[in-house]
Image (cartoon, rainbow, N blue to C red; front, side, top):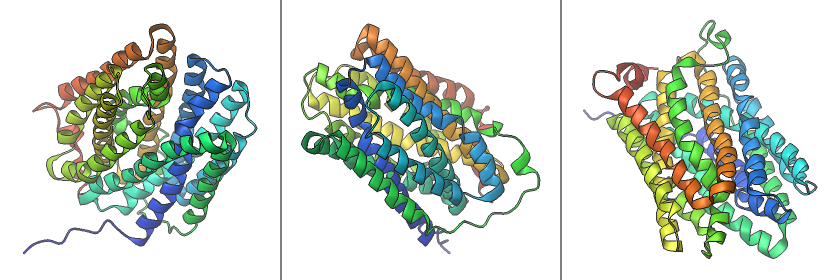
Length: 394
């Protein structure tokens, strides 16, 4: 008798994805525009890295607190708050015409990201059947990716035709649409685990996957921040297609990578993804044409699209069921640490070495993460990190 797989797609999962599309579309509209906006205001590479990076840092610190409160009282209220903050922050860019003002708006924007995404991750983990957790997280991961396939290029087109302020207003409108859609979500039923929500802010069981995701996002944030300036420096036209190519590769790998990690184990996807990330950034560093730039984009997209959902699923696998909010808070905080620190440190390095050398240095981080993961998970040392079999009955 053939077993029928448990369902992933439900009414609430669809509303979750629709709200996420509006939310991440709002963010991605600004992704390619903000570095150019700051450059036009006279900001240096170091200042651009600082303002881009402070977003990630401000999204970092609230996450453990948010995660613990999710375990106590549910996810929906934090998604509502995050979308509302995004509406306000996106509109405030209109009046943020100096680096200090942009710095303040980015802090507010980062807090909105922390509120929404920590809660959304926890809700996906609660909605998904354990046996298809990687696949569900992969499908959820396509939501921001679809936004990144369209929105950065669209943001540049709107800027060229109508100016920066129009981009900021449309971004606020997308966030408002996300806010309205969250109202239709129903909070998943959760079993109460005595004392779990009071066990602390940091969920220690997910620290190893968190370190690995940092090794990938450290350079990923720098690439997202500086790839268009790098392309301008190399006289590569239509470089906005980088984001479209990268997003297309992410969608492709997320559609299949999550399912592969459910069937063959998380590490069968994580280790090749980290190697692919390192190779993609190395290729990008040597780009002198749009073709080579897009090859690098494709490799980076495949790596991130496969690796991040598998690492996310691993984090849920190894976390106690009553601590999933705290686990997602801890794990997603590591994402922000990598993005923020990477943008700041790599921006400073680029000031002294140029973009190509900066990217080449950055390629070493996912390679180091891959070697660390391999050393910890080779035969005889991986049982305590797999988590997948233990959680299949959650």
